[in-house]
Image (cartoon, rainbow, N blue to C red):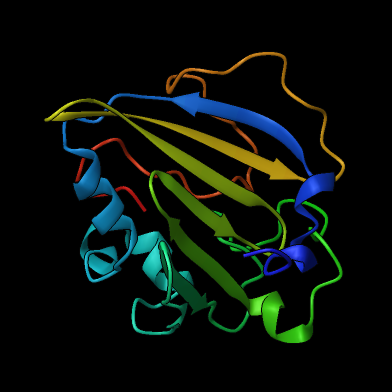
Length: 173
């Protein structure tokens, strides 16, 4: 993976916030759920309007990771509720990356979402056979680092915030 994500400028992004929450499901279910998007239309209608579940392809399939990209529909700049960008571009991205979102599951417990204007990372911490504690962070260029993690009840109120995933096992991505 060395150099694979360099265009997204990861070392220079600031973590704006992190959220930890409890999901009543085995970590493997969350990992699998993140790795497919058949559920996206019925469970995440706003997401499916921006990136149709059948729009992408896997581009990383060998080794302890899997993933690929989904394409944003024309007229959308970001996976935000408004479809508008919520910040500066994360790096010097080629034109094809400006309308793509990359999703990678990196074993044993990391989920990485690379967007043109922010990066989300999820670390899955198994607590019990039927419970997982995900820690989700959002990073972007030009942001002020948060002082402490926030709870799920503290949501950003900006009009162009990244789409939030709920805490049920059926809707992790």
